[in-house]
Image (cartoon, rainbow, N blue to C red; front, side, top):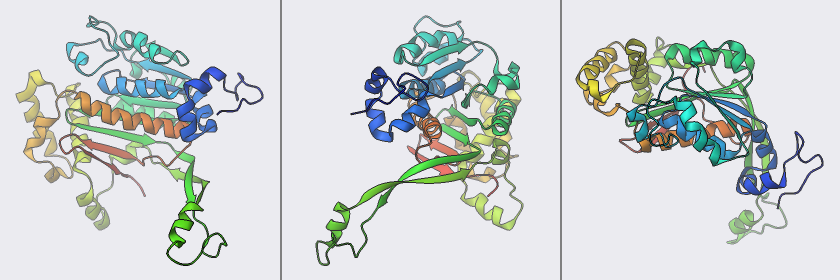
Length: 345
């Protein structure tokens, strides 16, 4: 049962209605973590399939406010993975078309739609948020927004889904969090006896304690441009996930073509992807067949990557549990994901 606190309904309190709504979450990560979420304002850029998954997860988690920003119109392809857009919405602004269903997920969250282009937003626009999560953005736009966030102590996240592949990235700057650790009973404790039952006694007597920790994140610019020149870096290059080099190819494609690979341009786009691969470090990690698996958004991949990305935003805002530092890559063909830390040590 959640106890009512003095000043309930104020900035530090939580209402009975909210306590009932978020009861399961409060039991999972605690009242203080839920209060931090409840006080957080988040900007989500890009409302394709991945953006819809992230929006759903953040709204259900109970952030204070979510602004969904997207200047594109709903396309027929969007309807395959974007479940917030109602039928018959082709041609409407993606953010505005998603607003009603998003708000209905949790009336306690203030959900807004912004139909403007993120690249036209001034620096002051981003500083009103506690966290910014960008999808479907150009490399230059991501670098600019991350720089603003890093300089202003705002949590920055990025992610995309390309066919069977997806990634999530976090730059939390200097991030403080608490982690629950098991406190095992000492061997000389009177409650723990020697003999066959000792291990069971230790387990029964175990308690947990909250440990405060701090972790440093590098900016996106440094993470995307590791220095591979040293001998040690060359060894690390061989151990780096092929999905990192795939991401480099796909972001370069987006820069050159002004869009992502599209099925209607399959032959042309495959040739362009192979050409871009040839000029990338770690090109040998990507076989020719990679080009056939990075078209459109797969709904299942959006669900997985969106779940991880939403979880990381919640962890960062609630300051509970260790975050992923700094990339998460998901390979839908293998059905597995990996966390990689890239950039300065």
